[in-house]
Every structure is written in C-alpha cells, then in structure tokens.
Length: 572
Image 1 (cartoon, rainbow, N blue to C red):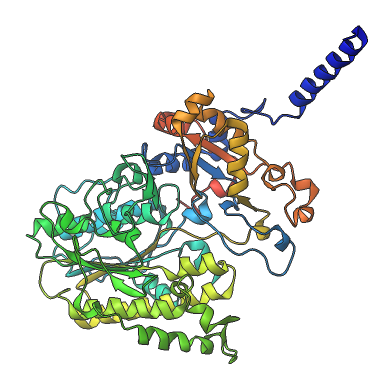
Image 2 (image 1 turned 60 degrees about the horizontal axis):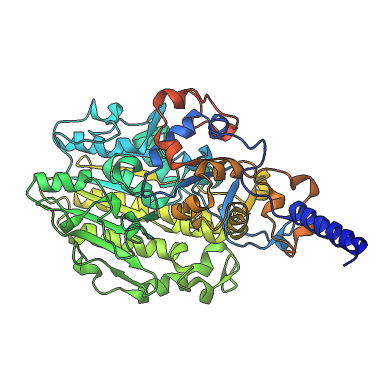
C-alpha cells in the first residue's frame, strides 16, 4: 500500500472515530445538572417533609420523581391534540403540590363535634384515626397523627354508637371549588359540624392505596408500609400492593377499627364498601391478623361486574351476595335525563360507552349503586344496635374515575360529584333513622385532588415511554419500571454500568420538553419552539437521599420556589 493511500485511509479512520464520538448519545448526568439538595430547596421544606413521609424504603421505587406543577407522567399521548378543541383528557395525580394535597376534613356529630366551626390551623388526615380512638376510649393507640383537639376536648364521655367515614376519591378542594354548586349536603354538614380549612393528606405521593391506609391507621406511608398502588415486594418483583386479591399482608400496622374490634372481643362491627382492594387500608387485615375476625367487606370487581371479597379474610354481606346488576343498568338508562338534553346521551357519551368496564365506575349511576350497597349494609347489619361503637368506611371511587376519563374541568365530574353529595345526604338520613341523631359521628374527607387540563395552567404531559427510553440511552438498561410516581431501578445493572441513582436523579432535573418528544412524533410541529428547552421536573430524589433527611435538613430547604408548594390558605 502506498504512503498516500495509507495517509488517506488513516485520515478517514480518524474522521470516522471523531464523528462517532461527536454523534454518540450523551451519557451520564450532563455538566451543570442540579444537585439533589438544590432540587430539594426548589421543591421546599413543606413538600419535602411530605415526600419523606410517603417514601417507603425497599418498597417504593428507588427514585421518586416530582414533576413541576401541572406536569404529570402519563403514557404515550397524542401530540396532535395540542391546540385543538379536543385536548387529551387522561391524567394522573401522584404529585405533591397543594392543589392535589389539600382535601376537605369535615366532621359532624351533635354532642361530639362543635357546630359551625372552621379551623384554620394546619391539619392532616392522620388526625382522624387517633380522634376516633379518643372518642371511643381506645387506650394505647399509636399513630403518627394526633387527635384533633377541637373535637376530642369537648366531646361527651359516652362513645358514639357508629363512626361513619366517607372518603370521596379524588374529591380534593380543587375539585369542590371547580363545582361549588354540586355539594349542598356537604355544605350543610359543614354548617352543622367542624371543617378543617387547611386539611391536607400529609404525605406524598397523592395516591389512593397509600392514603386510604393513612386514613385507617393514622400514620404516614413510611410507617404503615403501603407506598401506593404498586410496590417492590420482599422477594424483588414489583406487584400490586394488595396482590390483586384484596390481600392485606403488606399493611405493616393495625388500623384503629381492628384494634377497637379486638379490644371488644370482635363484638364491634367493622365494615366497608369500596371499589377495590386498594382501599382496605381503611379497615385493616380482617382475619389475617391474629385475634382478628372476618370484617364486612364489599369490593367492586369491574371485569365481572359484581360485589366480591377475599373470603379468606373478610365476609361479603348477605345483602350483596347476589349483585343486582339490573338496578345498575336501570340507573345507567336514566343518565340521559341528567345533562338537560334528551338525546340518548350523557354529555355526549352513549349508553354502550358508559357501560364499558373501564368507564362504568365513573358515572353517577355507579355512585347511586354504591350508595345502595352502603345503605343496605347500614340497614341490614348490626351497625349501631348496641353500645359498642361500630366503624363503617365508604369509598366513593366515581369522582376520581370520572376525572381520569373526562378530566376535572368537564361537566361529567360535576355531575358525579353532585350524585356523591346526594348519597352523603342519604347516608346521614339512614344514620338518623337507625342510630339516632346525637349517637354517631360522620366524617367526610378525600384522598387527593385532581389534575386539570395542562394547557389551562401552562403545564405538560410527560410521555413515560420516551422518558424511559431517554434514561436508558444515557445510563444503560437500568430501569425496571416507571410509574406515575417513581422509578424502579435494576441495581445490579446500575452497578454494572458504573452509575449512581443520584446521577439519574440529577439528570432528571435537566430533562426538557424537547427531549420528551419522540423523534418523528405526529404533532411535534405543534409544540411552541419556545417551550422545547423548558425543564419538566422540579426534582427527583433517590431512596438513600430521602432516608438520610433529618428534620433539621428539611427545615433548611425553606419555602421553595413554587406557589403550589404552599399548603395553607389564610391563617394557619
């Protein structure tokens, strides 16, 4: 080979190597990526405290993500809907911001609850269970929360016959404020009871499974062990927290209901009507716990359209053993009348669409049907028939379900909320008739608010698939699963790649809208060029980082950079 040819070949090889180097995907955390401390300071102390309370080491994902306000993780969504009259409506809500974390806490009960009182101090839902323990005289109840002094300090000594709790799933203050005329019964209850205006969920993420366990135990997820709807099991796989079989084994501590039941030789009635196993944290383990019994549990099985329970640990009430599907269908046929336009549709939705398994639990018809089940249980079971306090918990899934399907800004959610409020009035009337006014306590709260349409607030939907692909491109095949809450990491792969979780978390702090748009995605030309460099996450935090936070360290983060990080309104 001549020297000339050799020189040309060598030059070509050098150019090829340089081109490959220049064009290769960037790896690792980019220069100037934020530290976890700087991201925590941006998020602020109030929310970092909630995030620390809500993260369960070994069960939560190894990295907790915090999208900026009105940004949220969702699946592969359609960019061609941007700027149209038909925006993408699906949403997720596990973020820590105030509009999701602020929830009503309203208690009613003549002789037990002060009338017409509005409390402005900060409070959260961990206070409900210890308040109940105090009202019934359950000694030694341990919880992260404290009893609400406004309730227990003036309550009469004789315990109530029934403590009835209604949890409106997805019924946070931002939803109530969006539809102020949809809850007259709750408004009357507020006038006759005590309302905590600065009530919050007390932890993050704002997700169903974790927070219903908080209602029941009075403790945060870091204590009760339920991080959300999914978790890493001790064996390693990522599973549904209730193992898709209403199995309570991963609830680490007992609830106030089951401890009270056990203290009374299981003579108390403990009962729930709920959508699925994720809500069993309200009542507890049933017969799975040594000394417990098979409490009354009715859960909705969407695929089979029936009430059911895990009969190893709970009892399905006799009145619900045969599901009256014909009645539900009759309620669905009446939906057309509710929107004021007699056209065979409910807000543009056909009856066939509304009866699909994935839509049915989000309608007013299902709310009414759930109300039937709860009233049947109240009337037919031994609830409130003796002097041992009984506990009943009802979870109304439909507002949350409707919000996911149609978004909280649309009228479907307002109508579902209105029917939920009608059922609240019905529950109160049933309690008055069976138990007697002055013999029960009725509480209403919610597990979280809802996400509005992002365009309304300058937000963005984060494409989870593209997000995962981008992490893998920079750090290797280290991701096991990304949820709307967190990232489960393959730690063996992480070690093999020679990167750390903090590296990944820092990178997430730089992640932009432009990066999150899949190459060649239809509709990408509709994204304003000025938004492409906009970062999507306020922060991301590894398990090790969250475990090592101290109260002093959290306080040092200050108020944070976001208005939505302020969890209080008015005086607190």
